[in-house]
Amino acid sequence: MKVLNKNTDYAVRALLSLAGSQGVYMSAKTIATEQDIPYQFLRRLLQELIRHRLVVSREGASGGFMLKRDPDGIGLRELIEIFQGPVQVSECLFRKKLCLNRARCVLRHQILRIEQVVRDEFEKITIGSLLRDLADAGREHGTFPLNHSAPAECSHH
Amino acid sequence: MKVLNKNTDYAVRALLSLAGSQGVYMSAKTIATEQDIPYQFLRRLLQELIRHRLVVSREGASGGFMLKRDPDGIGLRELIEIFQGPVQVSECLFRKKLCLNRARCVLRHQILRIEQVVRDEFEKITIGSLLRDLADAGREHGTFPLNHSAPAECSHH
DNA sequence: TTAATTGATACTAAATCAGTATCAGTTAGG
DNA sequence: CCTAACTGATACTGATTTAGTATCAATTAA
Ligand code: FES
Ligand code: FES
Image 1 (cartoon, protein in one colour):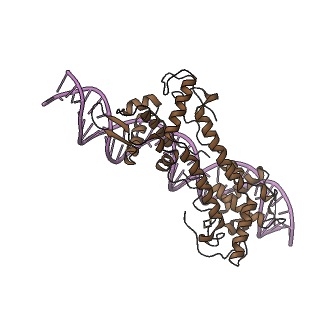
Image 2 (spheres, rainbow over the protein chains, first blue to last red):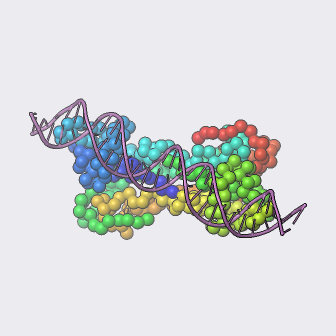
């Protein structure tokens, strides 16, 4: 069960780049290089973020993208909902044969409760909090946050 | 973001049928009819459940399947892990360019923490608890649990 | 004028999901 | 001992989703 797909994954990283250099327009190319995201893929994501008013853009030469909202107000939940649809445990676990009354269904209540817990947890992780964590980690290691020459690849979990 | 796929969905319902008639062997055909699950699909799921020692089977005429473990010990988490792989938020949200030190990675800690919360929540929902909920709902409405002639379809969320 | 950039789509390959089909082996019951 | 009702195992199919690519038009700074 993988929770985050590439869309959300890349969107988070792109937003971290944008949040890391607020006030200036950053081109898709720069972000793609910085975060190692496929360029055309990223461009589609950025359009989606514009549609949802998280970022603004400027066209033409030396144009680019800029974060519009407060990084602390952008939670992982919102991003998941934009790129993967609403957090939903199951369409309906117990249809016809089992479910006796939708309105009073105990099972449905359990499912809805767990959906709420999951949503709340994702809500807590914001672009702002991630950025601060990165900065802390960077200070600890004597490097700048979003440093381009970072050590060894991480492949794990 | 849909959390449960058809495998898990059907497996839960099949296990509810088995838990509802413990001590006797129940054929795949009976379960399929009772829970409205595609027959051949269900047979594959049951084989998987046997491999994981949740149920046992008897071959031949009047053979079938029987629950082997305590329904209260079978959590949604275990079923998700059997049919959808380990609960995992993201392969790795912040590779090379961003992640400075895997072992001390703050971001990784956040991700691991949320994974734990999700796992715990699913752990709490067991076949036993669901069965009791169904029984309660049934009593409230004056029908038996797992009653075959249940009212209207439920399609929602 | 032109090179760099965004806006908007259309396209593709691979993986996953949901479901079907087939055949061999086992067993209860007549 | 036959046979119908089962499980065991596996191969196949079509639809959808995922991840990534390609293209072309419009905009703008230099
Ligand atoms: S599970 Fe959907 S109404 Fe009961
Ligand atoms: S996110 Fe994987 S090591 Fe930092």
